[in-house]
Each structure stands twice: as structure tokens, then as C-alpha cells.
Image (cartoon, rainbow, N blue to C red; front, top):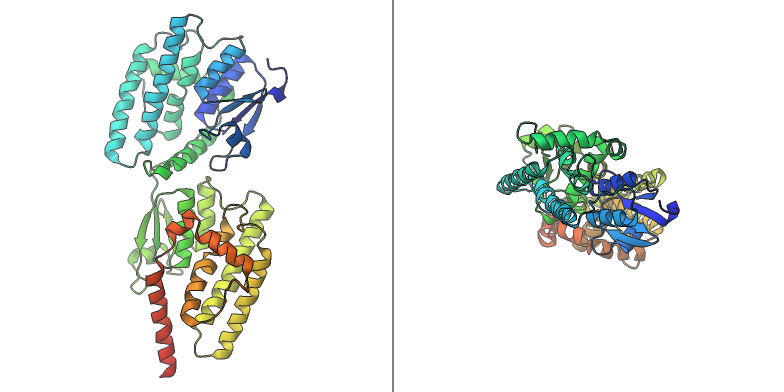
Length: 451
């Protein structure tokens, strides 16, 4: 037993099978500990200090000494606390235990992830074949009620990933027909009192698997996990600041999607079907459910995919973020466009320039950090992409000085930081064709005024 709760901490994420391994071992040993929840995609400084190599959970901290990697942690626990051993005492059996535990991670866990999350169908099929072959080896190895004999041991704890993955991913890894011994073992394992007490709910497990799969998607080797195969589409036009908002959020969240370019002068049946009210882009379609209006889409994305949050968790801060994003649309986007394209009424143009300037000044005073979101950009910053990219572009065409470093030094510095952020930079439209488009539109308005 640990001398006190303060001496032993476990940094984990609810639903992680690797964290569950450690929790089961600690419960079997009767060891008290403090649990510290870590959020995938937004890991704490504490975790990064304790596990700077992998930057992952679980991390067990004993007397301020961190141990990472679940199988390493299990051995440490068994060597430190001798009661209720999970390792056999015989050296050869210990070696076999290490072999099969490593086999589970190397051959079963890796193949299971690939069999569901690989984008390429052939690669998925190959991974499934590898997984079934690996499970057959485990089926043949299982001689007793558990791999550990009459009670669960090290290999059983390592193998919890297999039935857990089958339950959460709704993917039939094994049945009573193809792997009868493994199937019976999984039922015994899940009904063990310690396992039943530790195992999180299916919703919590699913949330972890989904977040983990989405983080793996950053390498473009894996697809995003959902209850069923997710279908994510974005209907948009290159050059739209509102579409750009959604693209930045999707990239920041590492969500794969299909982009369907729309011609707004000849609107497609698909666009009219998905957005019959406004008939505009962007339209975000998730599993055939369409969502319109860029700020509404941003909130939906943040609620469905939890990694790399763009809205703050505090309800009051969320309300402020929504307020300022709406302020940008109502007071800056609207008046700036009117200031640029109202060429036949000078008084109206001056009025819009003044309104835009006043609103930008208010926003200048609101900016307290590197970004509106703090040290990383967030909801308000994404909403303000129009200010950073589109206003400088159109003022270069018209000669209007709406947004300058002299008038708005904090906003100007913010805009440079924001536009040079790798995620933003990658998702901005090319400037030259956009400049040519707006210049042509502006010149045609001037020509019409002169006729």
C-alpha cells in the first residue's frame, strides 16, 4: 500500500485501454492513488514534463518519479507492491508472459487500429487478415480460464484491448464460432469484479477511441472513427472567408473531409438541397446531415470532435467568444464590404468606413494576448480571418485605409501571427487570383457608376 495518496498519481484519459490496464493492476493490488485526467489534444504541462518523449498517457508517478508505457508500469507495480502478484514467479513463465504481452501490443493492438482506421481499403483488409492470424495464436495459447490461470494476470490485463475494441468499434474481431476459447475468456474477464468496477462506460470508451483515431488522422494514414463510417463533406468556394473559417477549423481538428467546389453563379442541386433557406456556402455535411452558417458550423465541429478545442471550456468565456465572433460579422464584415463596394453614394461609404473603424477599435481594445484565444488561436481568431486576410486585400484594390498597423497595432501584430500559423497558412486561398477577382468586380462597379 502506498504510504499516502500524495505519493502515487496516475495521469490518464478516461476510456484509454492502456490507462485501464494500470487501473486494473492497482485495484488488484489494493493500492490507493490519485487520478489526474488528461484531455487528448490539450495535454497539461505536468504530463509533458513527466513524459516528454511520447507525450502520452498513462504516466504513473511514484514519489515524484514518473514511469511511462503501460506494460512497463505494470511490471513496476508488481515489483514494488508484492501482494496479489500479476506476474508468475518462475523466470521462464515470466519470459513467456512478457513475450505474449508484447505480442498483443505489436500484433493485435496495432493491427486492430489499422483494420478500422486505415484509409486505403486494401490496407484495411491486410490488417484484418494479420489480426485474425494473431488472434489464432492467442486462441491456441489460452489453456486455462485466464491466461494467468484461475485468476487474471499480466497477459489478461494486456489483452483487455481485444474485447474492449470489439465492443467499442462494433467490429467483430472474434465470435464464439471462430475463436471459442477467446470468446469465453472475454466474458469471464469482463465479469471479473475488479474489471467490472474499473471499466468505464461504453460512451466513455467510445469517446476515447474517437479522439484517439482523430489524432492519428494527422498523419493522413488513418480515417476518422465514428459509430459508422463517417461521411464529412464541405460545400464551398475558394476565396470565401466564411468557407475559409470552416477549413481552418477542420484542419486544426485534423478532420478529413471531401471538398465540393460550388459555382455561385450556377448553384448546384446539391447546394440547393442542403441549404434551401440561404442557398449559400459554406454547407457542412456530416453523415448526410447538413449544417449552414460558418459560426454555427464551427460550434458543431467543436462539439462533435473534442480534440484541439477552439471554444473555451468555461461557460462564461464561451459566451464571450460567441459575442465577439458575432460582433465581427455584424459590425466589421458587413460594414467593410459596404465601405468597399458602395461606390455610388459617398456619404454611405464614409458612414460604413466610420462604422468599420469604430468596430475595429473596440476589437483592438479587446485583444489581450497573442491570440483572442490566448497562446493558441480559437473561435474568435477563426471568425476574424476576414480582418487579417480579406480587408488588407480589398483595401489594396480600393485605396481605403480600413486596417493599418498605425491605427491598430495590436490587431496588426495579431494578424501577422495568425496568418503565419501553419494551419492558417495552409488553408488560405491563393492571393493573386482572389485579388484579380475583387479588382475586376470593383472596376466594373466604378465603370457602371461613370456611365
